[in-house]
Image (cartoon, rainbow, N blue to C red; front, side):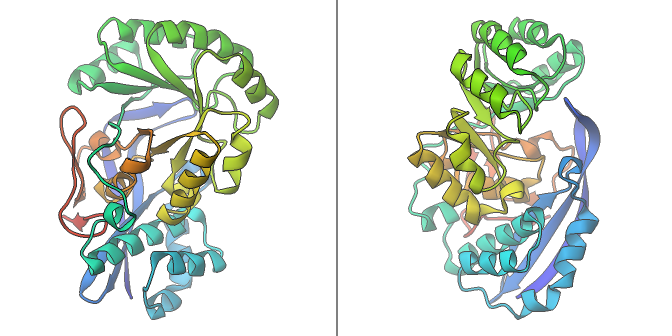
Length: 336
């Protein structure tokens, strides 16, 4: 396979703030893998929480460039095993794995969801994320993007008040993501108030390793609890079953579509709801997530919608959440 790496600094429409950080740009690595006259594209974003930068991913991949270019793609799964054996980070593996899946589907002239034996006739609608800001700014974002489901980023002493004020201006479903900012007592208390305000579930309200707190929360919360930071890789799924009602899989964190497919299957066998989330990727990464839609209960794939400028074509998300899937194979990605 021929390998090319591209760096992008994706400008955001608004400063994106969660409980632990803010940023106006998202650095992103796009991998291009070519074979048989076709090119597949994959993406991973930098992430300070996991100490991942474009440069760190680039260095990992360049160190095995010759081996990658000597690899003949027969299945994405075989390529993923090869990458794991080389001990790359999951973020670097993700970009390569997504590119391999896109390439594989294009070589076989079928979208990935079809190759996986699923139908795109029914799928969940993505939420649209409202980052932490002043209430006035959060309302401005909601007015700018009327949407049926909002994910509200929280993590302040005024969290219930924030949701109460936002509720006055929309009948949309709310989901709350506190990004590990609460303790168990706060989460139990907030859940009661937030349920009355039309919140569907809480995503990772406690620190990832606060298992005692999570156990207490699971027992007493009036809202479902979805794992994010507590569920990074395949091995985490089983443990989460005793502490959460569902899991949010991030392709960058788990290492791409190959492990995500296994995580979805295991989560369902354990009775967990399944969500796939994004990390403010461009349409390159979002188009890969979209291939999983028929298998999901919830999805957060609004990354490209949060950008001032996109870098690719692929899946389109229309007003109200309808998804237009590309007619080309794989994830259907082409760089602009």
